[in-house]
Length: 185
Image (cartoon, rainbow, N blue to C red; front, side, top):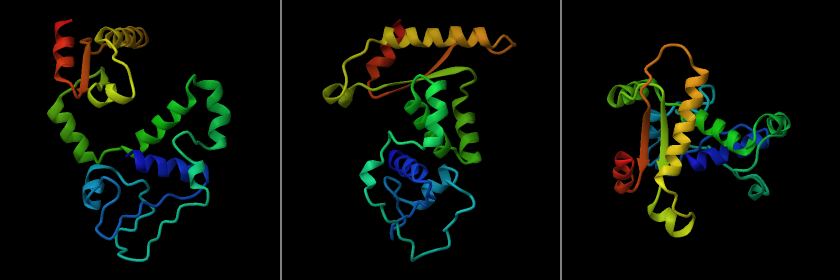
């Protein structure tokens, strides 16, 4: 999705249409199968569909494509968002990723049925293994949970209508000790 998002942001910044071109084996990036990608996610655009094409689709990188990256966004967005959001680039990447990761209805139903998450919940991604080696320092679980606590306090202040008031956390991690640590605390 990172590669697709990068392509999407480049095309939006250049005011160009994005067409995902699958190679001759039917794969794009990490998606080894076009069918797998299309079975999980909604198409980028239902109007631009090359599903019946088998040949002749060429993707050319624009000249100076390196000028565009995940920190590029269209000028019409930049003007307004700089005044409305403290982290405009984070907001923009979030908007693009949210759009690109729209699930097919049957996949979303299946996930909701199997997970039975309920609402509201906070999602935490605590990555420790390789991240600690090269990119980041260790953050204590208490720091994450303090942020979760503040989020629920704000949510409960803004949402006064009746709802299930259990506080739920969805944890994604590569370190099982994180789960034990959270459960203990």
